[in-house]
Length: 559
Image (cartoon, rainbow, N blue to C red; front, side, top):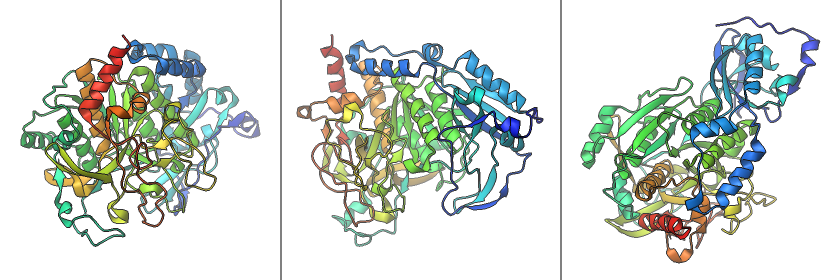
């Protein structure tokens, strides 16, 4: 690998550089600077190119959403790359600068407009006029920088983000284990009945309560799952599906940026990986599952999404994402790069289901304010919140907002401080933010489903039986419903939000959740459940068969 930079030194070189907007980063609160990163350490960085036809792309999105569903034509991955991918000139400019800096281009994904570079810390420091340093933090050691990234003027109009210089963990899995030590008297609130602590379901039992069609083989469908750690074993999946009386699912893995299927501990991210696979593959039997493993960094997260979106081998049409972090934890450049990648799904006909978070209306941020989780807050995804579900067979006895307090977690939800209210959500009654100033923004979540670990899902992780919850379970649960919808109607579901918000209440396609709140601290229930859309459970939990029929009717009514 090249290690020598041919860049000139001194003020003349610095004068040709410009600061990349929105690239500044601060150290994590509580982090301690322990010194510069070794100049000889090899790292990988992703450069995100600006879309040459971004205005045209935005216009196409608006046109697509306005068309009747039966008249919508989604782009193939190949057509998208040709029409909206990175230009030869932009790729050549980045490649030329990389070579001058002693860096190596390891991957170019033209469709997503990303170029991945590898090289030494010393050469990256010189290339971007910064100093990478190491930080100790309670969550682990990471590499980072303070200040901003700089680029030569020849690239400043071509690049929108440079990610991967900072290696801090960007997201957390939205999985909650059942807390066996919790009693009905503990916590800030009381439970309706202590016997409810013993409730749990297999994913197909939850699907039955939500009126999902059963015995629908989905072998024509493919769902992608994004994982930022952990792993699974075939033997574990075989045992789980055998116990359910279902065939072993087809599961493939894709390595992104060195992320691999690496099972280790059932109490770690393995629980997330197995939950995601076991839920979606048991409620949509026969579906091809593709797991994209990637490092837990902003660059890794972005690259996994772009690889899945533009995968010309497996071509998933539904994505499930159960990882995320508070909007404020992202740099604006990484957040916007992720949001742009998610928007690609709307043109490709790829539906994206994202967990809304498990830390209530604060999203786990201890600053006295209210926060929502990203990427759930992206206006290009279906954000999935959580409920507490009690029922048996096909009969639901009760369903309320999931809120077990600080010990057990609560559904995420609230109002975005980054994204405006989307057009399809304008009539839903999204309230102003509960933060000072009361800004109006994208409301989270869109929909909901069972997430309380005390009414949780029976899964198998590394050979151990567990009952788990969290909105992590709701994303693959809804992904499974969309897979079933595609299989039964023969049409891509695509971006479903305008359709879901447009369903007449008279059709009763959702079970509205009218009791509870997501104030995890129990001090100020600023967001409460109620009729219609709310900041805890969105439109509500699904009535699967009714939703599929409504989707089919929307196709027929346009003919």
